[in-house]
Length: 172
Image (cartoon, rainbow, N blue to C red; front, top):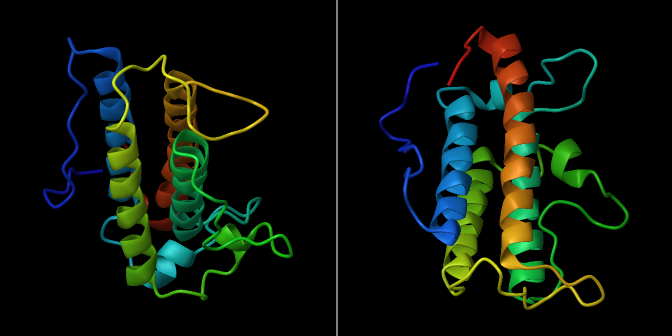
């Protein structure tokens, strides 16, 4: 898969501080997700391309928008619970209700949430600092950032398979 100049993706610095490295790895994975979706039509983004799964690329974007909010806004910053696509009555709404929002609105919500997540991460000076939310199960910034890297890495693997099944594109 070719690099899209409209989607900047930089390798993390080889010699930087822990918190900066965690943020850079997150940004690398965020850009990877966007590259997996680049150049596809709305129908292709919504296509359930792997016969054994209901996953779609658009569903992954919607899911990761909610995951970004949950871990950065709610857990890391202590903001109130909020759901964009899923509800208690429809816990898989992020993956299932793909026609509830136009694709450009989904991308706008994702980009806005990523910007807010970056802002929140920037309010901490050390990865060992404790998160401001998450009563009952306190975590530090490091744990949350590493969990988010894992979340993106796993879903980018799903995106690889989906993209290859959609149009044969492989790689980066």
